[in-house]
Image (tube, rainbow, N blue to C red; front, top):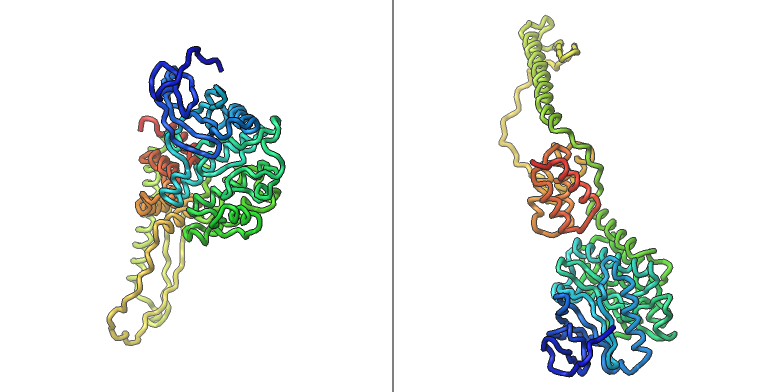
Length: 486
């Protein structure tokens, strides 16, 4: 890139002149640099872009590598590879590339939310909904890179950064391989981080998209359990464990995980690349489906077409009229039955009694003959104190949600409604998937009953817990359209 003339060395932070960082002059448009990270290939500084009035991250190649032409070329290829993905989803954007006085640098967007490594270090295992959301975002970036012939080679929590909205962006394609730019390493050279190395990488073989998918599965295991699947005392031992050690069940590490996730993670961590999922998105989709099946509450039907407001107002009156007709029929039957009871029975008290009941409903007359058992002359049993009975165990909120879901699937929305309301109240604030499902199911049921109250808030909570779902988006749009002005 063109630099202004007359650059001179001075202390970092001065405005309007060149900036010196570790003996390297940066363009004077970047001011107030502050180191925020140090990695294997270099250092990362946060600085202010004076011309565009925004914070940026500047990655500098380490001094010890700057004199190595091969590494410098690799560093430059990082910028070229990522620049090709600048419009891809969930990928860090490159703004500028420079090489001044033998010190290459890359200017990229600054992401203030830290990394998933920071979250794991501070909090351990992450909530299921949040983990699925982050994994889905990382998967979108990796699939886009693979479609462009780029293999990341170093997928790990430290390279999954968070923006202001807590969305993941994949960074540091520093060991990536662009298929049409040649190989970055000679055969037998291992690049990457031991804890996330695919078996083929640990053996020194060439990495492929399947290697990135393996590393993403390791990240998934760690997000869900707080531990890597093959943690060992040394990096070498951990790298070799990827090659030969059996895959531990995640549900054994985190007892709150259902066993259904173990098969999905086992395929994602398969030793043979051909046995893994075809894409990162398919892996995350399978993981979500496994959790859905375990929860037993995720199948959702299509929302019935919303009735026009006029039709919704008429419906209660129709139900009232039908109810009045049924009540009149029952009263008529009771009166008729009572009149027959006043007639003496010619066959005596020990003979069966036959009573005719006539029930009249609108358009229908039913005559029913009922034979009753004769009265007994046996002496009554002695009165005893009632024995206490054991009350059935109260259902927990997740069970209430499951029972309500069965009623909802059968179209029995009025019966499902109070169960979902109790489930949502009992699960509020837990951040569990059951809370997300109950919130969605209650929103769905209210809309099926023609109601608008609280539906959007329930959908928002469901999405906060479990991430974006097409079912939630569809119901939100339908609600906004049908409930406008309510």
